[in-house]
Image (cartoon, rainbow, N blue to C red):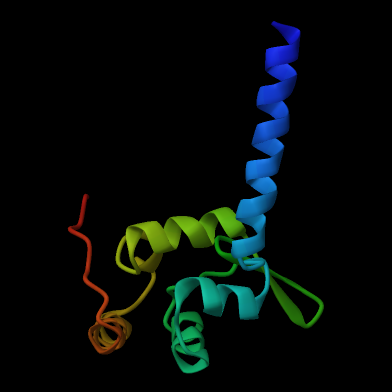
Length: 112
């Protein structure tokens, strides 16, 4: 039984190492841009329009933003629409909608 458990753990480690080869480091700006498959301009728009929110999606350390990988993954899974943009004004909401249309992002149904 213990040998089987060791084999399972070894295989799990092997699989995780292979997955890590294909995942960008989404704690960095460059990694977030790559992971979300967006341009630098869209990234900046997401920051300015409250899609990426300080304290939720990232923290500022010195002059750099360090992103919360889990929050960025959750944002991608849920699309840009959802709870994360409740702080955006109507004008900002229109800007986000325009960006999403340009990117071909299909909005998720509002679950609230």
